Length: 185
Image (cartoon, rainbow, N blue to C red):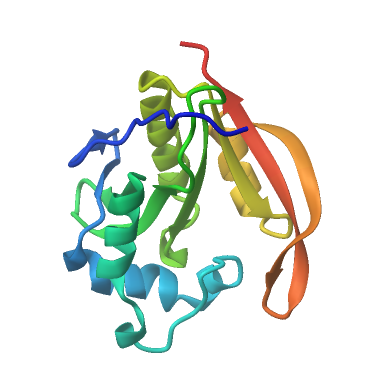
């Protein structure tokens, strides 16, 4: 369903919780994003953009510019106590006036897994979207990535559906399960 864009985008939004802060991704984050996402083989098992051997393969400025042009949020996930950039979380689609839903994607470095950071980042971003008038938020995960499913469940999302063999990644097709949460504000 097409319709007029329901624009929630703002420059320089900063979201804060107990352990983390979400702030706009910037070119200075290149090394941290490379180390924690693009060059982390554990993350690469499920991160669709793919593994990169060298930092020169990562054009973070172009990625940031693309998101700005599309008026989509892309945040660095930062540990407040240390200032470390450990990953990113992003809006993957524009929404329209009639449907008012968005999909969110996320990735953090494997050495930061199992500390609650991703769940906290997802909750923070979902709450922000709801305050901006979004009605429904979706996330999808490759079904073998059960840790991502748990993140969604801990963020209060519920299973909606699975698309069989939806994504071609690492030489084969993968099923993708989708979870969602509706705005109750």
